[in-house]
Image (tube, rainbow, N blue to C red):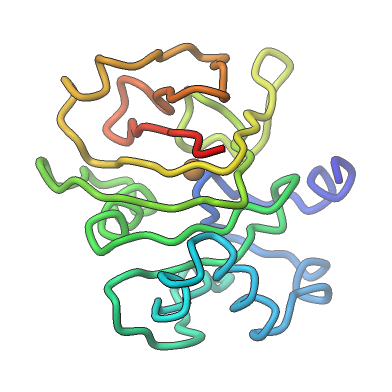
Length: 187
Ligand SMILES: [Cu+2]
């Protein structure tokens, strides 16, 4: 997987938003049905079945693959990261993701919730925009987990904020940035 990641040259960050895609990735792009299946794996079946499914296009725009009705939005695995990392989020978390992708400030007090039941891999626990690891900063692997985003800083102060966290217990990712959030394992 590492070769593929290096070769792709994608600018993808932790939350599966790929803003650039190259020809090679387009060739191997999964079908809409594959992406819907992948996205639904992020949440319990009872939540996923009524969720809206979207994918991020090469130009950074969202494309809706399926309209839902329960207020949750799911996104498929980001092929640029090692391992599956689909996610399902509520409306507030979706707004938070848009703020992160657009480098704007998340709305204060708008707390959001996300499922990542297939786990995830993030390039850095300190840099919200790291596209790949560096010598001093390896991939952060986390098993099945849920995330709390957009909470007051005092909430995050109650959890570990190590740059190299123990991902088997709840920890803060991107501590001290506007995009700090709680990663809480569920298995
Ligand atoms: Cu996560």
